[in-house]
Length: 423
Image 1: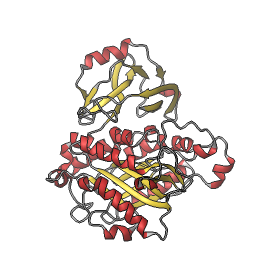
Image 2: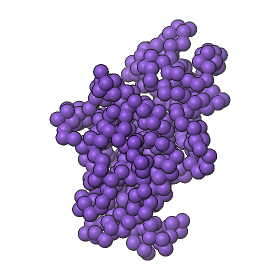
Image 3: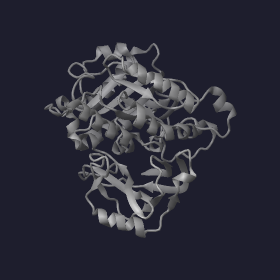
Image 4: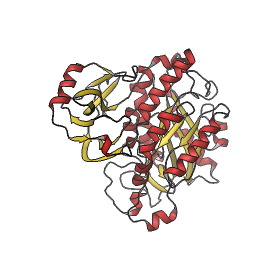
């Protein structure tokens, strides 16, 4: 279940943009194969009629908002994932894009110019099999930062919580929406540690490993690993990168604990993982899709010595992080990173496209939060990567990813990249 708030970033100055609620969740079919309009399985005439007949929830005149951004007061509540993609659904889900029951329509006068919906894109890689000639290093891969720092029932409103959580939905929901890079920090808490809870006791050694936000534990690691595995088992061609990037608690000077974690990863994920010995950033998607073992998971490990001992783990993945506190500072840093990417040696790398609070922000800004910082920059990331940086991006990780449109930008960019390769 997911919670959305409607914010709009305008690309064109139409006469009006309206938002409608549709009672049904409609499936889409490859909406970015045609850049001028998307093709849908439902009748387009019906949707055009609905756009003109239904009373809009919101009507916006872009000319009244010169900054190109408008925040509505519409909260969409908690929405079920359409197409059979709810976590725990035992039935086979439906491939392709699926609309949530909210649409935006652009009008020029009374003429409908364009429609689109809030959507999930659970199978976008396999839906666009023409991408098979792109390498992993050439792909634009949408990702999240501190991916498992999410709590569906988290109600605390104090400073601690405002600077702890970084996402609106759990790992399963992120993957179903189209995220393909997950960034984790893992902590180890030995038996008897006071941070253990009655819900996750210490008897099972797996629950000694937790997902952290720096020094603070957020939730157990094992359910995250199993959501990743379940997603890959339910899809045919999606490729996911799981980056265990840092180990802030309980690992320093404790190689045996790294070995315990690798044993857990091996038990849960080895059967679906792409070994570093046979796959690299230069590997083409077709070579992964054509494998007999159907392995499509890359697990990168932030401790290079531990990774070197493994036959299948990948070594540390390069994260480019600017430690910026303002959108302008982040833009300057990302521009430099994209310039450097033109000369970067082959290899997977991630642009960490989020703002970072200082200790003073946490202590003395009572209205600040990671969500507010993400909101300040997410509205810009969509246009920056869509208009300028898409040729150079590999992995782009963000906070509160539902506040930007980088999944759609990535899909469209990859189609442009493959057209350039084939031309």
